[in-house]
Image 1 (cartoon, rainbow, N blue to C red):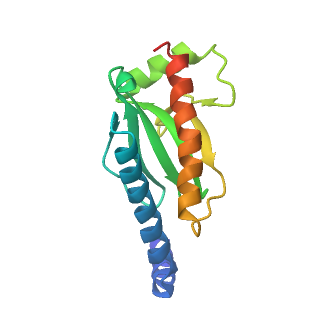
Image 2 (image 1 turned 180 degrees about the horizontal axis):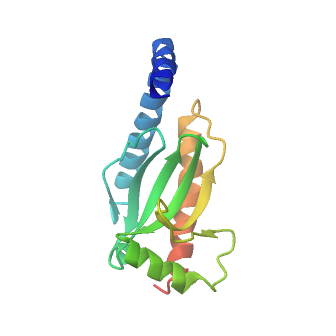
Length: 160
């Protein structure tokens, strides 16, 4: 029942760890966004979407993909406690078209999504499976080191 869940939620909030962890995740994502914006000014970034403790993300997209109504999202999945990168689209019709176009291509280690309710990606992969939030500079570097090759690979797959 909802009341039971609310009581458990309240109890966890009273302990204080949830708020600290959530603020830490949002702070890291905000810092990562600013870092990437400064280092790669030719990429377009979106606002940080904090989510509902399910996912937190922002878009970091080269103009060539934006012109095709695509976006690259850096996603933190809360329950899995990992960072992914997703190629997404501005709407479901465009998403579906690109999934179909890529269906028979060799995507290497990248996973092609299946069109469905709640599916926002076209292609996705894990950036960091077990993030160490006590070493933020190293975490930022790990994400960046996998993010840029993903963007290059996606661009090549799409023939840009």
